[in-house]
Image (tube, rainbow, N blue to C red; front, top):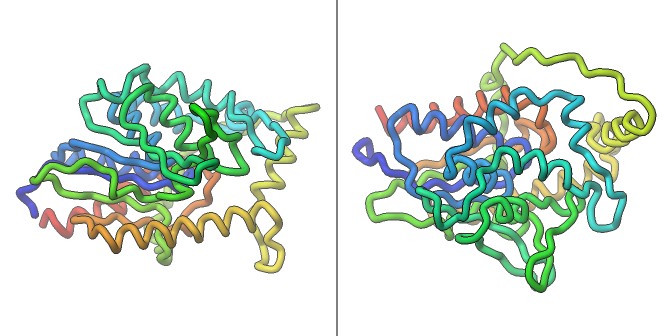
Length: 295
């Protein structure tokens, strides 16, 4: 196994936990591996696509400097039945860091998965505008409004295929590496780094912005007791269980050469302000997995 240096990489969905993909990619590159192709769903599609286009360093730097004020500025509530957040501000933020490229022009073969919610099927983006592919793949149902596309509406690729192993292009000598951040395994607390990135203190937000902040805090508030899940936490937990089971089935079917399983209990779906910790966690899991084959 140690002689193989070319990698076909699959990156799962998983919300903020998908930031761990950055740490995994960094460790792969540090060890001299060459990524020849990528397939991703949701955050996996975002991180994989930006890396394939050569913009991962810039995106990482911006994510690491995201504070509470920045975060709440990106939230444009829609309060519609289609989704809590319109996503326009998030997408404008992303558009700054997603290189303006067509997928077919990337040096690394790339596929992003989305879900056609009207016709109930997978949609694979392997050509066309990279940003639009990523936008569709990360449209988390009930959070972001669906993306109009041709005669239908698209939502998060993880709904049907959170670990899209079956769509990654693989050369005969490529090692198949799969990163699943929705793994239904215990979270070893020792992996969490003690040293945490210092952050700026959030500024006081008045008026309408304060109301938005309070609203989001209530929605994202972690459960204290099992019997008090709350609607939003109940919905999030249910979706995570579904993603975990679908991902496990895909992994069992296709048997990767290297599997980097990251517990879904490690960080919450919306823990984007803990990016530094999550990247370190991804690197730690990668080190553990790769040490087994590089030794």
